[in-house]
Length: 208
Image (cartoon, rainbow, N blue to C red; front, top):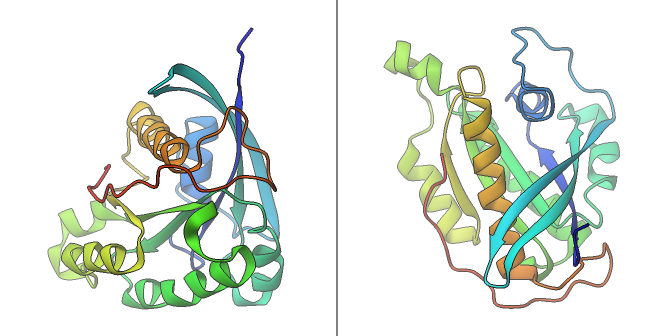
């Protein structure tokens, strides 16, 4: 029996087609599907991680939400940001518009969650496999993504390919993110509505 179990709500967001649902399914089911149907509304799963903290190993329960990226479902997706303590923003490195639209997603987050003292955001650039096969397909430079994170107090998760991402590596990435959430939010049990800022992290290095 674990004491002081942490509980976080985490939401995956970004434009349609960037690979949010593929990331979600790879993480919760350990599989990659070449063709996925665009998410309509919301899908969610619960994940458990054992994380390392300054107080020793703790168990963290994550309720992970996969949101729709289509504009017509935007209001539904935004409504599920509320009470999220971790936001995973995803863009497609082969489609510049998905990177440019991050500003709109960030605006939605701030409008619904307030300023960033009560939550943490990580940014992932997906579809690295396409660029590795054909460098001409790249439309977003990694340095621009890193600069965006530095300017907006967002953790840089790195460029990756959900298609070829090893499941254990993906889980390790999310474990590190949860550990960063704990460093910032703290508390023996993080509840959805009463978390306050504690020991904000300044970590900016990539995770992928």
